[in-house]
Length: 145
Length: 145
Length: 145
Length: 145
Image (cartoon, rainbow over all chains, first blue to last red; front, side, top):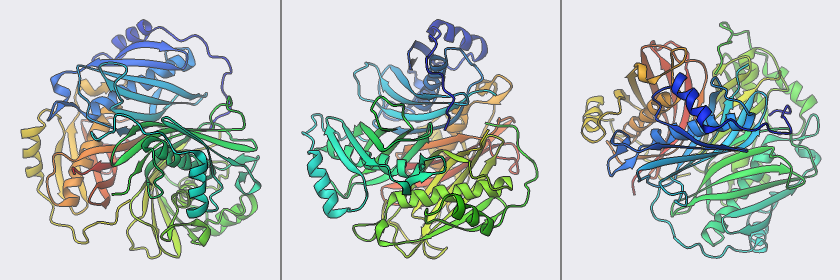
């Protein structure tokens, strides 16, 4: 619980800036930042066979990983700066229905952005944006001291 | 994770119907259903001294209780019927900033409504609807067999 | 995620010291600290009619409130000092079976105690210590700056 | 919340039986079942470069994946049978300190095992068993209908 919040949000970095940082410091995650906007971030990754479970469903940890990435990008949107050392403090996820498709998406929206912690909610789905969510999550990123 | 979801939602019960059930079966919770709509529920309770902590802040468990109630009402909205024996299966809450005010509010929105489980996200705040959230939560209600 | 942890734990305060602080600063919660030990805290409250739901079951928010209190006491055990302004940052709870009995218990054990955050796991049950848990929880307390 | 629990647990399958099922149905996860016992499961995976973040720390999603696997194995221990289609319903994780080492471990213990749901708590750490946890988690597996 924090009282130190900036009242006006600075403009978010661009998705290209985020992806350039990831390519440099965190190569190989497979997650891509698609869009950052005021109070949200959109992430995606192509589905490949290594992440499929019997029946052709995208595995839970793959969905978790993209949800976590979307929250991380959302921190950059909420604070107006790319902060690679922001780290997941806690994250809870609920799986809602089987995930089938060729592209996995996650959209994170800011609930609060304080000096120490940034909190948000994430929806995960497959393929088209009007598809029902396959998972929802909520979690906290801790800002470096 | 469930595949058995109704594609078209039935109309939600009214808030008055929900409050009549609560008065009969669960008197004394202090939580009131204000509005049910397609995919959401709004709940509130007046703040009194018994729920205040030093500094005049609404206690965490009070906020949890209202968030839990809003999710319960949301189950009625999602399924189109008042199901008193739907029970919280799990709920996670994050406290965002001090809660001060005379009325506590919670709004729950549906993430998925299956035969066995209903999942949603909740925002809690004080007084005016444009106030920043004091807590966010996400959780699951289990439907009776 | 924190690296600043004290390697040796100071001795915990006594339950009597904790209850004296509660009586002074947080009267009326109904929760009592029964025991503090190295890395754990035990809390209880008598069950009364106001916390019962149809069928005679202890309500979920009552169990949440005691779990939250046990975590708070556990912070005092983990840090060796009574810190009234430690606050719940996030807490997730799972309800396991109906809670019936005359006394509700919660035992919290420390997972980590850092400078900024203290994390623990809680078990909640009714009456005798060998009864099966009615709820389990896990959560984080934030230390004041 | 369930009342239908078996009072006596059947003997758990062996770790070899679990790993044979995984090799057949879920190859390539990288997680191994080390031990199943009454009410618990132990899992591990070797750390390789693909799961390291700047500073040489094991990534959060890698830890989540192993915690999730340990819970899954624990379901087999709790129910006495290998049930490949048991699925994560929800899982919350807290990261406690940087994870560095050559082998990642996770130990899951049963909180309750019902007909519909199995709930447990997980500790994750690196290398030696007396090392402090790098993450703790708690979650629910849903049994197939």
